[in-house]
Length: 230
Image (cartoon, rainbow, N blue to C red; front, top):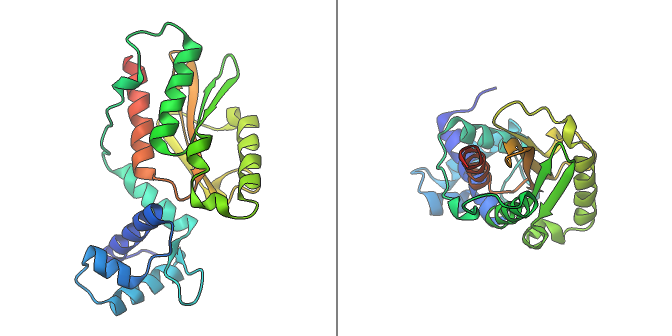
């Protein structure tokens, strides 16, 4: 079942605002912030249609709306169809790679800081992981929920144990919520891609579903391209 252009605009704004605010988004908020040119009552009707189609859900009767996995997937697929801005990350790199280990560790730390997600780098031949970004990710409001950190730790462990099972041919892959092939992963997302350090490896970002996909997709794409040219 398709959605209209107006519903697409409303859905993308709701997902973007929810990513920024971590709060359910109301029709009044949308009208005040984005000036759709239609009244809040009409926005509510469109939001209800998006809810009925599975793109949004309402946590409480009087609350605004929150994206579902389907809503996030629509938003992410729309981003992937666009030519996203390439980010300037040349200052992450030294003029030459003198120590591969220190190089990857520094790169992973920079990626974690810029993405506000947990960044993982993996050298396939050596089977070595680097993880950076715990301080950043633990600041996210989702981690205030009971058992969230425990579930994330299990999710991370499963990811590390099965990283070589991910089918990554070219470009980046994104797993959202229940798309993840692990238990207790419904609240998390993965952005993952092959890369060259210059040795063959994998770069990935893990975090809540409410991650900044626009920025993080651009970061990973920019990093892959820069490493290829380095």
